[in-house]
Image 1 (tube, rainbow, N blue to C red):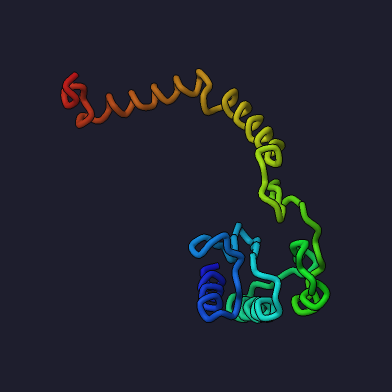
Image 2 (cartoon, rainbow, N blue to C red):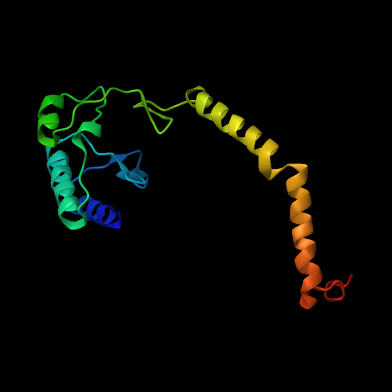
Length: 164
């Protein structure tokens, strides 16, 4: 998706899209994950027209297509031209807050409590890993035996070379 990143940067540099900025130096126009894409833009006509053009160029240059049925557009509460912008891009409107890949998405700043279910899932996964493979006694024993096997077979790894 290097193509998308370059095209987005060029559009931003030429003022064809307007990013959402916290300040002059901190902004994000898009996030890519596997075959998913999140795009963050100011809700104005020029940005959405340019986004539509960029998506068409993406399709022409990479043969990747956007699945309209899986795509959504989200607006902040202050947006007064939702219908016009939805008509430009052709995506149905999604409602915030929502979740994407288990992560909460919101127009507000998220607090620790918003991530508690995700944190709990991660803790449960770690507990399972510890008991199964990563930290089990058998796994540690196997790793030590494996290391000693190579240590004994390779003369360059002899104890004398390590001052032992």
